[in-house]
Image 1 (cartoon, helix red, strand yellow):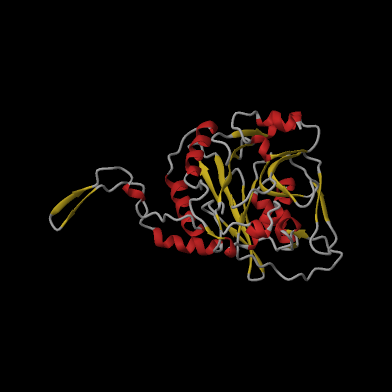
Image 2: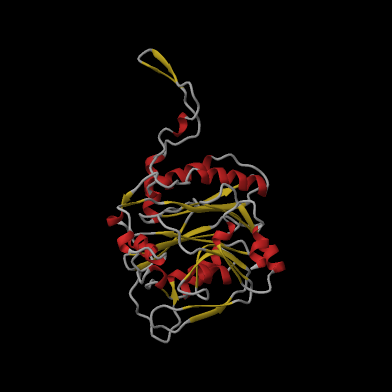
Length: 365
């Protein structure tokens, strides 16, 4: 579940696209948090870590039991910093060795903590060197340890991946701007050594043993791209399309081009199914969170693309398309800042039709 990538236009402006896949709909909300919003994170029995937002933030969030405790799944701040949460089955955080009176950041709150306070990837990396972070159980997931890793991009194109495995926190510089799911990020980079032959140039003719052969169609260049929806195959395809997708100029054209790229990772319901008995902890917890009873679970479940986001990092715009719509709605941080007197929280289902004015809907709630 989840594919994240960066696209750069002809002028060097950076845009971020991501999909989110689950077999159920979580209670997603669109949230606008203006600068000055008080925020907090608590890990285990430690003292809470309190802070205040110094940037305007817009994000797709899931409440952790109540609307005051929001977990950012995807977000952008006015400085052009972008955060994404993606599934990572290999999560294994460090042991808790911090004193009880030490304010500790819960890993699930990394998104709010970063977007509220920092403007660049470099600032995030520096702050993480000083801040204790623990991976602790999450109420919104039924009390399981959050199986996630995290990507951070800024408007310069700088990118990192944050993962917790083997009992340690790892921060990887991400020169590709691409991430999917397990295995860990450095494994995906190593795997790309198996794809040095990739090219977008069609080789449509060849001679074998003196006889000529011709491919009558276009598109043969993609024949060796891995085709499954596994995280490993999606990573390779995301690198390919980020590399070779035509570069255009201007925000509108770039977002449109990025939308076509992200269509390559849009999964319809039923495209693949698997036994509910083999569902991951994340899937089980998501089912409980949405009220699904164990007796009502089907024999087989299917993951699908719940929503897609396209983000103009420098322009402060986020576009959203849900599974129930063929069109995108657009959120503008500047417009929300101008019209909002305080934090705004609107269920994502309010934006299921692509024709709605998303900023107006946000401000009217």
